[in-house]
Amino acid sequence: MAKYLLLKHYRGGPAKRPNAELPMDEWTPQEVADHLAFMDRMAADLAERGEWVDGQALSPDGTFVRYDGEGRPPVTDGPFAETKDVVAGWMIIDVDSLADAHAAAAHLSSAPGPGGKPLEEWIEVRPFLSETPSGPE
Amino acid sequence: MPDVLRAAGPRALAALVRRGAGFADAEDAVQEALLEAAARWPSDGVPRDPVAWLVTVSWRRFLDARRAAESRQRREERHDRLVPPGPTEQADDTLLLLSRCCHPDLGAAAAVALTLRAVAGLTTAQIARAHLVPEATMAQRISRAKRTLRGASFDRPGDVGSVLKVLYLMFSEGHAGEVDLADEAVRLTRQLAAATDDPEVDGLLALMLLTHARRAARWTADGALVALADQDRSRWDTDLVAEGVALLRGALARDRLGEYQAQAAIAALHDDAASAAETDWPQVLEWYDELLRLTPSPVVALNRAVAVGEVEGPGAGLAVLDGLDAGLPRFDAVAAYLTERAGDLPGAARRYARAAAAATSVPERDHLTVQAARLRESVRAGRPADVEGSVGPA
Image 1 (cartoon, chains in turn red, green):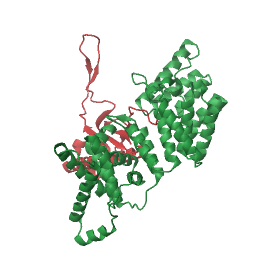
Image 2 (cartoon, rainbow over the protein chains, first blue to last red):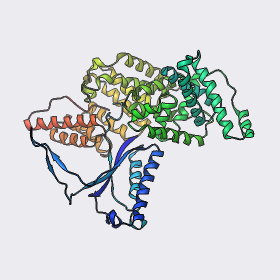
Image 3 (cartoon, one colour):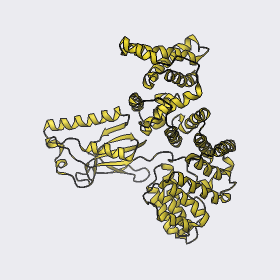
Image 4 (cartoon, rainbow over the protein chains, first blue to last red):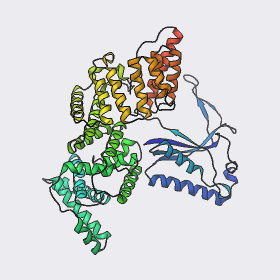
């Protein structure tokens, strides 16, 4: 009964498996369609189990913004072509245990890629902090 | 009007289940009857006996659904096995319903959700808001739980142990939105205690009341956590303490000790002390020894280390920690508390910082971060730390 963020990365994280190296725009249209269908099915399965909270894809372009003092416009930097880490999208699930969250992340990582073989991407799992302390005292 | 419905729904459900209707089908039928009531009562007026009205209408809905779903012959076979309608026995019904909703085949999240809807009479939307998930997600969780129960067999009221576990979990979940899950858990446990003769049920209720009693003092006005030792004890609810202690005495007198009674005894000793310094730690430690015998869990062993530290000194408490897994939740928080008491402020600051990083809630993280900052400041200033803001026992 805790929420977890499953983060999908474009870049960053531990070294990728060979199947996850090839960018998606170099896959065949069928491979892309199969991958997207898998993602939809996974979201539907989570919803059917009553474990789905939210999920969105994110654009790879991001800009860093900073406060630059009273009355001055914000400072912006980027986007950077070679950022260390880029987040591709996220899913929030509400499951009974961390083990369940890991199982869902592993399933997400099995999404098909080139040749229909599992991508085996790394999925980052981050527990949500709750607003109230766990346990009655 | 919604209050009338809320109270009547679970009782109608219980009546259908007792008459022999399957849990999932009965729940569907009662939901339909509740919708009908919500549509008709405002114009027709609330019936003199709302429960009887709901039982009649939902029983009719249940039979209609059966009729549609099965052949005439199968329906009649089943009908012969149904228990004839009789006077409601609210007491047994509560346990019956709870044991269905807290069936061991269900995951914790599903059991809590189903209990809140079927026994507490909350709407799916209220339950969803309390858990901060979309309503559609909660609706699926509940219908999936009902599907799971369709295959489960029930020939007798189920395992009280799993019911108590679910109620305690519900109590610990905190709250969001307009529904207070701790209040709901107390309400349901009261019903269960009235319906059963099990000292552990009274033990759990006592534990809840004795914990609940400190609630107002547990937070500052702006929502920060206050450790047990630092709480303003004049804000504790003395009525709840008295009720909890009386319940616990009655339970202990029956001489069938269980883990909830032992935990309640520890809570009672804390509630009983006029100041943190007056806490009867030797007795608290004795109860922890008892609790560890009943449930030899690493979490109990960790909490016991705090009591050992109070009775035999922080060094002895730290020695207990040496034998435990440092990966346990709250391990660093307990270690930091004992380390500070032992006089090693830089070490305690490091451990508080580590505990903050491992915290599972925002108030705990903030509280532990403040402790780390307080100790670092003392170290910088080269003076002993103010003795305030401790982690305290769990």
